[in-house]
Image (cartoon, one colour):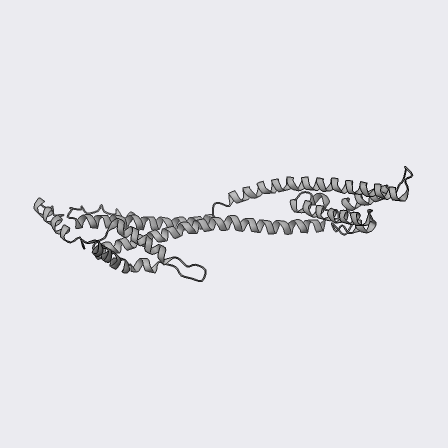
Amino acid sequence: MRKTMSLKQLTANRRNAQKSTGPKTTNGKAVSKMNALKHGILSAAVVVRGRCIKESDRELSALRRRFWEDWNPVGVTEEMLVDKIVTTHWRLSRALKAESSEIALSVDGGQWKRQCKGDANTIMAWALESDPVSLMMDSAIGNGFLASELKAVRALVEKEGALTEAAIKSVLISAEPNSVTKDLEELRLQLQQNPDGLDESALRAKQKEQVLAYIDSKLLWFALSKANCERREKMEEEAQQGAAVLPSIEVLDKIMRYGTMLQRELSRDMILLERSQRRRLGEAVPSPIIGLLGRF
């Protein structure tokens, strides 16, 4: 049965507690505080040092100092409880960092894998088609490739003054004739006609002008198609990244269980520390409800 303290005993306890509050001077308090910090065995051991991770002793010391100033522990028991609170808080911050890192890994890693896999699958699909032009125009990378091939043909036309058979064959979209090379060949044959009876120089100039105009129109078409594909692919990627913000169920469950355990430890130790300080100051602290601390 718990003994009830008399008013006289309570007053005496409070008076005695005032006599044992530690150093009074500023220098004395500073020295005492640093002495206590030196004995933080638990929090000193919590810093992780490895090849790829190096947690900061300075940040931990600053954290411990803030908690020490807030709680101002007296005696080994209170110092131990403050040290446990610091340690648990540090570990809880690590759990939150783990969650953030998992999200970054899921979003960034997923984006990288999709990009590499998407490019590889796209190029492989082109190789399986005898005429992959329509398939290439369904992706930004494909439209870019088509435009680069036509720009090379345009440069040859500018250099040679005409659309030659060799320039058409330089288009490396596929081994077999495709819609791009067929259109170029058809254009080349049409330009060989001279219904207006122009002399060779005038005919060659006209042919060059028509070829360049045709190629420029195709380049504009591929540029528009590429822009549309980029907008669509960007929206699809944003949706994929949005879905990847949540870690997997297994990882999320592991982090949540670990965080819950730490939160319980933190709450329990703070309750114990508060009770210890109240008791030291002479308060009649009642016994805790059965099982209360065990649930934290």
